[in-house]
Length: 391
Image (cartoon, rainbow, N blue to C red; front, side, top):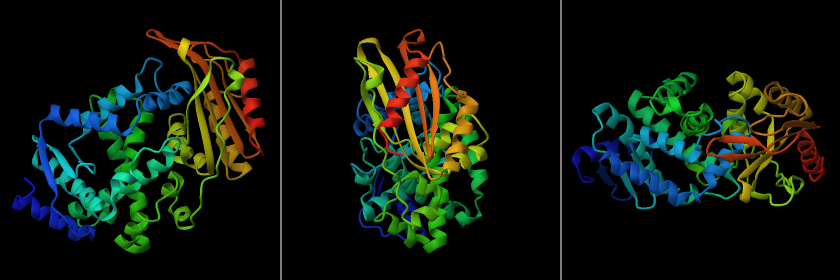
C-alpha cells in the first residue's frame, strides 16, 4: 500500500538520494505474475502502433541478425515479460510490482521504480517517452536518460555511491544474466543488446552528467533533451549540442510495382553499434560506429506476396569514418553484391563519407524465406538511392 510506513521510508530515502521532491502520493499496486505480464503487454500495445516492431524486425532479418523464422515482436514481449519485476506507469501514476518478489529483488526494483515516480512528478516523463514515428533514435536517447538516471540513483542507494560501479562489469553482468535466462537463451543477441542498453549505456551517460554538475546536470537534461543516441554514447557531443545530420528517406521505386515504404526510421549510432557487435568485437564495433553522423533506413514491403527489402543509408562524419564502417560491413556482408538464396541479394556501397546497405527483396512464409531479387536489382536500387542524396 502506498501509505505503508516502510514504503514511505524507502520513498523518502530515494527522494533524498536523487535530490528530487515528493510532490504527491505515489500509488503502488502489487500484482500476480500473470496480471503483471498482461499489463506489460497492454502497455506495449498502447504505446507502439501495431506492426511497427515487426517492421523494425524486418530490418534486422534482412541483414541476417535474427533467424529467418523468428517472430520479433512476440520474442521481445516474451523476453520483457520474463524479466520484468515491476514498472512505473506515468499514464496512471502507479507503480506495479510483482507480489512474489523476494527481499533482494524488492531492494533492487523498488528504489529504481520510485525514482521514475519522482522523475514523473518533476519532469512529466510520460510525454517524453511517447513513440515518435520515424525518430526511434531520439526516443531511445530519451529512454536512456530516464533509465540511466534511475540506475545511477539506485546504485547510490545500494552501494553508497554509483561511482564505485565498474561500467564494463555492469555491461557484462546485464548481458550475462539476460542471455542465460531461459527466454534470453532463445533471443537473438542484437535484441538483448537493445533492451539492456538504456540501463548500461544510459548509466554511463548519467555518470558523465553527474561528474559535470551532479544531479542538477541530470535535471537540466530533461529540459535540454538528448537529440540522439550519439549524444548519449559521447556525452561531450551532448554538451557541445552536436545535432545528427538529416538524411532523406531512401526511395523504393527501383524495386518495382507493388512495393511501398512500410516504415522509415533512424537507426542511430546505438543501433549501428549493436548491429556491428554481432559481426566483430565490441570495441571494434564501437570504434567503427563512433563516426556516425546521421542515417535513415526504409523497409520496403509488397503486401500481396509478403516481400520485404531494406535500404540503410548512413552518413559518417568523415571519409575515414566511412572507410572504417565499410570494412566491418564488407567483412560480414561481402565486397560487391552477394546473392543469398533465402534473404535475397545484399550490397554494401561506399561513396565519400556515405555508406549504403541494400538487402533483399525476399518473401516470407511459414516455412522460411526465399530470395525474390537478383544482384542486378540490388545495384539498380543502390544507384537510385545514392543519386537522390547530395554528396
